[in-house]
Amino acid sequence: MKLVNIDYIPGYEIKEALGVVKGQVVQSKNIGKDFMAGMKTIVGGEISSYTEMIATARQIATKRMVDDAENLGADAIINIRYGSSSVMNGAAEIIVYGTAVKIKEK
Image (tube, rainbow, N blue to C red; front, side, top):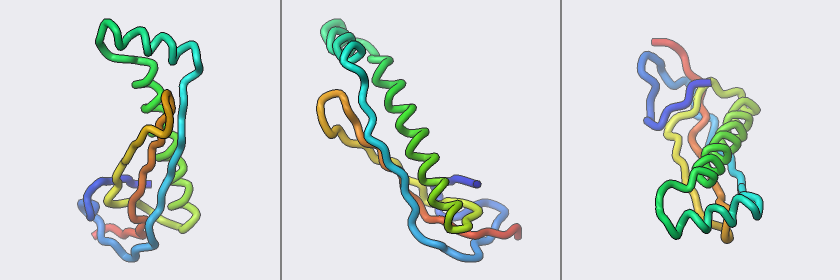
């Protein structure tokens, strides 16, 4: 599955647009890591447990989007976009979406 955030794939022609596909997840940290992250805000710096949480959430959401596209018979997903929001203290939603397409080499 080819994934791009532009509206074409170099060297390929889009045969058919199959529709919008998406994946989303709401991810949270456990209370112990959340407490330590809160302590980190006092001294400053990267909160690595949250960086890891967001990276994991992105991977899960992307996999769900790819699964959605595969169910449609897609070869690729174009115009991929990510969004995030805080749904509560210590939890974030990640959504990814794009257009599932069938492609052929030029």
